Figure 1 (cartoon, rainbow, N blue to C red):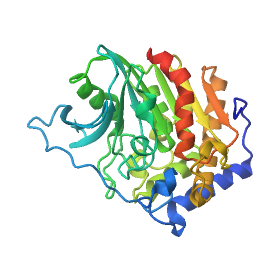
Figure 2 (cartoon, one colour):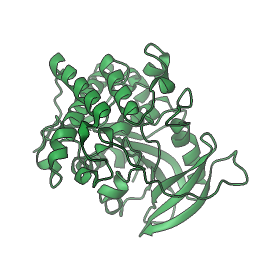
Figure 3 (cartoon, rainbow, N blue to C red):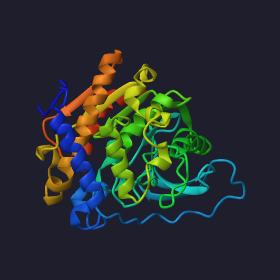
Figure 4 (cartoon, helix red, strand yellow):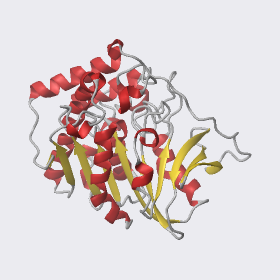
Length: 356
């Protein structure tokens, strides 16, 4: 048995070490190869390494750029397709992998978000997992956008000189579902799963949306945002992409930090099936077969920071009396082998909530 649900308050020394590790990795890159170099055998390295994008070319803008819509759908493999979805708020098309439901008829929508590179670095669910096979018998439409690198999947207050215009909350919450509803038979039920950078935003999406999310899950995410530790982690992730986190949520003390911190919005998550997962950062069986040098030098510190933030989130939910499920594994170091297990373990919570 490799998971347990007991949480402990992290020691201050561990928290300080995690902040230092996160910031050091994000800013220095440790002089290691770029993320495009085999993505460290599946480790979500783009947090810490030089970032290489290889985005999919998209269809030209539509005649009517004021409404979200599907511009083009390309077959990939089996029931997996790549759809170009127009975002009016960002004035661009967002390539989005879809895994279509196996049966005709209405299906719920599951947003399955990528990590810090947004999938643009070809590090993500579509490249490092067998998620298509996992969802093969599940009556759900799975949507994984490719974009939003270093964006925290939020609506930024200001355009960033490097990262540009980011209105990802609007895209995920309004534009993408509206566009998909125009082309597929959706039943109105929706859920969201985020991993690594997108774990916290997945919970925030459910907490702050005007729509109801039946389920929300954070897999090795960073759901602690507005504390000194959280601010350091958010700033480090954005800075690694050359961006300024103040363009997202303003300086410390701006209400946007608390608004986007799910641990401060636990009451608004009541009624949503919640799942959390993390590991203490020590490489082990949950990382097989991906254990390598990057697992130790990058994944261990990143997962430790995730673990501390996830335990903080669990404490907040527990204090608020909001039901949740938390799998804290005995080992794991921020690899896709770990994420793949977390995805499968999350389904006992997410699947029934979606009716899938």
